[in-house]
Amino acid sequence: MDAKGTALMNATHSTSTKTYDVVIVGSGIVGLGAAYSAARRGLSVRVIEHSTRPTGASIRNFGHLCIGAQQGEARVLAEAGRETWLRLSQDAGFWLRESGTLIAARHQDELDLIEAAAADGGITLFSADEFADRTPVARKVLVGGARITGDLQTHPRTAAEKIAAHLEALGVEFSYRTAATSVGKGVVHTTRGSVHAGQVILAVNQDIDRLLPDIAAEAAVQRCVLDMLRVQIPLSRSLDAPLLTGWSLLRYGRFESLDEVHPVRARLHAARPDLAAIDLNQMYTQLPDGSVILGDTHHRDPAPLPFQAEDAQQVLIDEAHELFGTPALRVIERWQGMYASGIDEFLDREVVPGVRAIAATTGIGMTCGFGLAERAIDRAFAATESEPASTPGLRADSATQSIPAAQKLFTAQSSKEETA
Image (cartoon, rainbow, N blue to C red; front, side):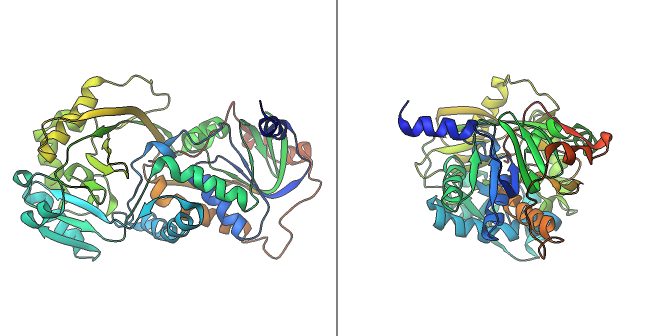
């Protein structure tokens, strides 16, 4: 090991006596967003991360920032995070494009649904010929199409690492290979000692049940696992934006909330009960190297098994052949995505004074994570902005003892925020 590596290992093993304004557990997109928001306020920040690099849903997703298909709280948070994505792509130096989102309509009821959603603006409609001229989708399967304006696309495998490096340059401290074992007011106990803070943000996504099992149970948070593939496919033209299909319209709030969604759902489920059974979201993104991400299926379970059915993955391949009219493709990679799934779209609560848990509890963490994180930091410091954020000398035992026994928080391990 070289001198730099030795210094890094020594740093991650040491226990600091410093009290930080904010300690964040989890370095996925939501955790990084909280660190960025706090750093921009001039606060001292430390991030606790059990791994050595992003390995969760923050890198396992489509890289699709699907803003214009959200509604309600999700739309507000997505819009709030859009400028952060644009700013960070410049400052941290990762690939991002203002792509919008394409929607292929293969049946009249899908086009009717898209037209109904377009009444609120922000969606450009195309005839079948116009859509075929703009995309690699086979003309014979189309009745029309659309583009949602304002949406973004990034490269999920590079964005999180680039953001973390940028945050380190801003003075944010990271403790890698360090798991949180319990938290209390003003303290995070870890496998490398205790870290003190004025505010604690827990951004551990589906692993919230390891730190807060009662809250996870109350919010019905479980793990949603996905089948995803990256392929080489001979498209007739490049795919310049994420591409949704009728199956996707059943999932996003802006479409799913409309009456016009019911005939789409009824027809798709009746025609393809096999696809309904794997909870298909048939969508695609093309990465800068030309490869295409195919996905995805969904299965929810508190402790899902890691085994992936080949039949489900073959379905993704077959559907791509039909949509694009291509004779063959080559699978480059297969993987299992994972994210938190709960009753609501978001978990955001102060579990005890000075400790806040946040997670996107559906597959829109990349889209809404920055907005959710910014709101959490705003709420955490709303009552203390006129006072010093740090609490020097806070003792772990006194902080923990101030919490009622039923509210003490335990875990075996914490992980980074993972979003799809």
